Image (tube, rainbow, N blue to C red):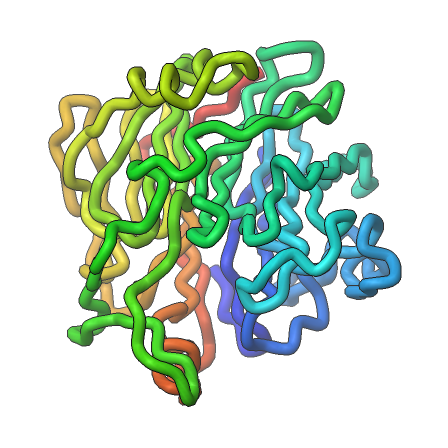
Length: 348
């Protein structure tokens, strides 16, 4: 669908009209813009250049370090700003935000900030799912993949802007100790320039939601397991983590993944970054390989729309931080899609 010759993309989502939106993390690359719409083969800053001009003197109104993005059932684009640089601590609490953009008018319609007790110093907001049927204006479920924060799940009431954490520090949201994935035939460690090699530190990352909105599926990047939790337990701000944990289910092995998606038949789609593959998990728990391709180099975010499964491949494993400072990425990065007889879960 598109080849990226500039800075590395990480997220993709598609609205009901087939418009494609992409996010770029504030990691090793110089990031001239954080969100783009793919238009006529070009990456156009979205919704405008001003909000994409990173300015730490205006952390509440400009994108600082974007990660996840998602189009909801009303064609509104929701953007997660981590407020970080290169996976480090939060630079300014005002920078950590969830921004809603109406793709019909291309205007920002909502900005929700996270207090320090929700977005902790080392929180890294990663992925999100939205159920517009809950509360007065809907609810967002978000993963915190920052291992130093304890990782966890975050719930946001979109009407009031109130947010709270669940499962912070639980073993199901943290990276598996000693986890070693093999990507492109090589053991993958964090290998910073001048520093010792360490195991991957990505906690709860990818999300999927059931067609009825009753179950949230989640998985750490540094893990091969899939977990499920009732969304009702997450939405109750008064329910303790211990009570929520009692309702978590370990659904077993799914492969090492950095992206999930869901369809209305209850299937979960998985990016297997070790195998360079796209996998479908049936409601029975059976796993089916849909595609395996040399172009799937760290398949990351997935999106389902218009009978297609979209996948973004960003070569994350080739970044300098995993090779003692040597950047092994080879442009272009790619956005691919495959025909799929499936419809996205849009809860409205």
